[in-house]
Image 1 (cartoon, rainbow, N blue to C red):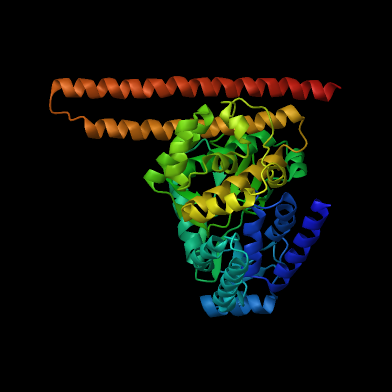
Image 2: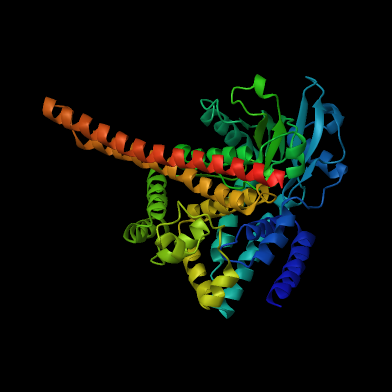
Length: 474
């Protein structure tokens, strides 16, 4: 009964958001990633807003291009497909060929009415949330309208897309083993972006992956690596990794440097966040404490990261696992599927929604987008392993924990090494020797832990191979 009510209400809200378009669809997309605060029926219903949007007419597209670039479609392109290959909440993308160079491109054009009404729409959402809060004081979702006020102006200026994409290319240039591709950015104005055309399909399209003999586990692993690098190493995080923004492109692995038979194409670079070194370190320590199940450390680092004392619930939101799993030091060993369910938690603890809203109202704004990114990546993993035996799905989740552990260890190791170098001078032989000893111990201790994680991950892969072989023979 409860599920049917949620579905019916979510469908009505989704239809209203689609009818109003623009900012309202963006709001629905935020809702789709809020598994930690909303029933699953709402999240799954709103996922349709990621790629089911109304296209602008070709006439309107031409007007936007003329206004921003100063040339018409016919002047710029020798070929321009009138049917968009993708329609999002703020823009749509057309396939075209540049008249001057003959290069095949993708042209991202903003919907003409979005910018005109964005301020009014955001103000309307803000007033609506404030009114609801005045009637229901436990409704503390003003942070969502505040985040939209902060993010939307950046997303509406496509010059940010271009600069963000170029920075990602620069950040990953030295990682030849990661199959990441970012479309070449050719030209950008506020409402028009011209980039190289890259073919591919959504990363969660299992039929497409099977057709091209692409291993979903490898896709999952490399997506995880890319976003772990962004989070813990570069501190420059793409905050909207839904499947419509992550494509898989088949390729010949013999001709690549990374050795895979696919590239991961990262699209839509409008929404990024810069993560400070301090945030990355504290966030890594939080995850490290969760993996160890050290309650005192979890409590300490949860306060540092989230600004809240509700560390058990925050840990549940962050990992998707119940506190009992974390407390029993089993997070890095569990073979249980992610079990976060708002309905199940409400059955146990009726005031849980109020506590969740308190957490979300108190955490730093950057953490909200990190949580959203985590949930979107978790949903991709669930889809990539949807047709696998239960044990294989559980091992996939476990490997994601192990991957996060690796990057946490690297982050903590490097920060501690920097502190050792800073605190111990090199003015004397004794001080220099002490510094070198501490640096060596620091590196070796983390090397042993990381090696153990790597061996465990390899063991899980071997087990999965046997399970798949046995399943195929039955």
